[in-house]
Length: 280
Ligand SMILES: Cc1cc2nc3c(=O)[nH]c(=O)nc-3n(C[C@H](O)[C@H](O)[C@H](O)COP(=O)(O)OP(=O)(O)OC[C@H]3O[C@@H](n4cnc5c(N)ncnc54)[C@H](O)[C@@H]3O)c2cc1C
Ligand code: FES
Image (spheres, rainbow, N blue to C red):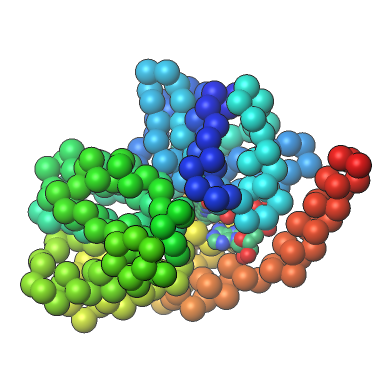
């Protein structure tokens, strides 16, 4: 059991949790994730390590409440416990001095991009960060990302802050203006990562994405997180979650993410109805 030591809402439906999990904090590296189960009846679901502190034994999770599991987690308060957290899982980001790197974070993926931008900066890279969200109030981790960026750009789909448009549009403009990147790293919704891959493909800039398929066991045994990369079947939980963006079959990833939409909708409706009954 892991105790929540800090909890904040940092944007609408977006929660920040600091959890006491010293064994995970001790081993955590950028790009890794954990699998959680909120209670005995809960399903297992993955969240990226947005930060960790080896000294006080905490890990930071930032998540968007989209369905039953994330809603349940979001309802837990400070000093309450999460039944189990397994990790760190997944292969860490390959951090080395590439030269000039561009870190692109979209939506809640900005929190996942943060430890990667920090590690790349600490490894001596020039870091150019582009973060974006649908609207200004959904932008998170701005100060954190800015702290480890040599150049920093913001975009919102509706133009309420920064450039009006997508993070991939900002990246395209930078490349067209002559910015040279040795590596692009993108994390966020699959459609965003696909757009980034399409921007960089003609310029042949190495682009790494962190994939987020549905996961169940996160042990490479159930096959839920199956993705096609370079024509080969890979399991994002053990082979990833990071892959070469230009090799990823994003169409398949997006289709598989939506495979259980009606079941997920029904589960959420049942959970909300139960909650209303208990509260009445
Ligand atoms: C390696 C990895 C790291 C992740 N890190 C984070 C993170 O740091 N913060 C965060 O908010 N989310 C993260 N996710 C996504 C998160 O795991 C899902 O949002 C969560 O499992 C949804 O569970 P739920 O029961 O609340 O919603 P569900 O009822 O399962 O789903 C509700 C809605 O969310 C969509 N959804 C479900 N799973 C995913 C997914 N994996 N990616 C995108 N959409 C999904 C469904 O299609 C549906 O529309 C990560 C996913 C992976 C694979
Ligand atoms: S989640 Fe089961 S194989 Fe990856």
